[in-house]
Amino acid sequence: MSEASSAAAPGAPRTTAGGPASPALDDLMLAMDIVDTLRHDMRIAERELDDSKRRADMKKRLGEIYASQGISVPDDMLEEGVRALEQDRFTYKSRATGLQAGLARLYVKRGKLGRVLGVLLLLGAAGWAGWYFGMERPRLAREAAVAAELASGRERLDAALAGITATTQSPVLRERAEALAADGRAAIAAGDQAALARALDGLGAITAEAKELAALPARIDTALAAIRTEAVDDPALASAAALEGEARQALAAFDGTVARGAAERLEALLAQLRHNYEIRVVQADDTPSGVWRIPEVNASARNYYLIVEAVGPDGQAIAMPVTSEESRKTSTVKRWGVRVGQDVFDAVRRDKSDDGIIQKDRVAEKKRGMSAPEWAIPAPPGAITEW
Image 1 (cartoon, rainbow, N blue to C red):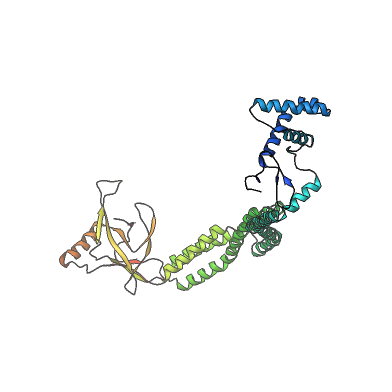
Image 2: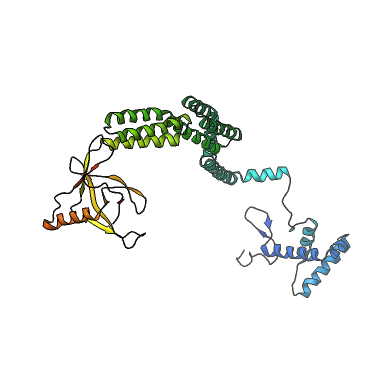
């Protein structure tokens, strides 16, 4: 058979080697179009598919429809289209539903779903680890620390209160300590760590105050004993006796502030008694040896001052506490001005004018054991710290 004669006729089913005939693509498309035409006019299908005669009439009518469109459709294709409609071919049917169908689909996609599930599990584990180690675990640690602090708080409160009671007999300090201890116990009951810390800090301050108050009698006795050993003049002993009376009275009243002040002044008096120095007129290029001022209360008068310094046995100037008669403030200075009469001021000026050196520059001497210096000039009635 020639190649031309072996070609299949249009619309005829094609065969494959060793297999049954299969419809050509054009035939399938035509059958689908026939079914679509029937489906869009269900009145035809319902009316014409009742019996074979009507079936034949329907095929004839379909042929006329296609012929009116210029399409020639073989009779076997019309028959094929009608059968396809009867068999619901070329009709989309939704996938099966239900548990078994769902499980089957999951099983088919188990590989992809497994990978997605693994990634989600890893992300979830990483998120949980970040939350636990970054937030939850530190929070639990803080809560445990607070709980431990509160648990030991009552014991610490009781210990501080017992220490204060044993250290001092002061009713004021004991009353303050009791009040703070009560505040601390209330803080423990409320779980308020900050309030507990404040109560403990307050008890710590009272403990230090009680210890200082308890140590004041010995501190005062030590200073008094040293003063009685050092003093060689009556004014020093009289000052010490007055300060002792003040200190004892304050201790009896548990007044730590007054007792501490008396103790400090006793120690200052002892330091003053131990000093040994000369008060000299200053002879330096950067400081005048004397100045005069016009007092504010009397513009026609003048106050004369010699600028002096206290020089120790080693030749070094000693800082001294000096109260200014102008400002009424006490300052610790190495140089200050002592008020003198005009005759003394003029004598020092003449002494310096002849050769630039003050021959008689020593105006007072403070010996050890003396409470005040002995002046070679009339004792100055006042002093200044600025000029």
